[in-house]
Amino acid sequence: MPLHEHVRRLAAGKNFATVVTLMPDGSPQAQLVWIDTDGEHLLVNTERERQRSHNVARDPRVSVLLVAADDPYDTAEVRGRVVEVVGGPEGRAHIDTLARKYTGGPYSSPIGSERIILKIAADREIVR
View 1 (spheres, rainbow, N blue to C red):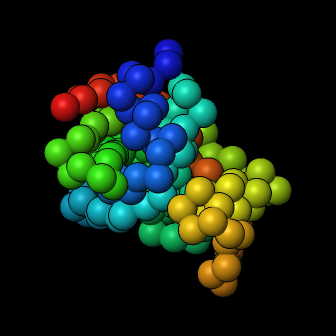
View 2: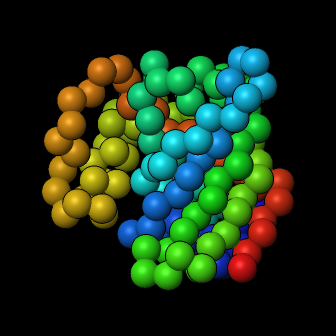
């Protein structure tokens, strides 16, 4: 099912999102991230060895708050789950795509482990 057009607009733009995952003890972990969409899923790129990767491997439930860069009252929340993890060359290429979107150039930070894409399907969308 396609994401709501408001969610797609925010995810496609140069806007940030906060992704909340659940730690092993059930407490929340929030991270500010670059965000993307394929129209049906939200896409978050991370490293396989990051805490958020371990969290969603154990419990795929997430909450994502998207905020427009030019208007902090233009927001959307997606509550859902990670339905697929994509690694390899596709994961690596995606971080460069995101870097060009947000910084205008290729990804320049050191990479500690394999880059992966977390594909998030919405169970609920709250648009404001």
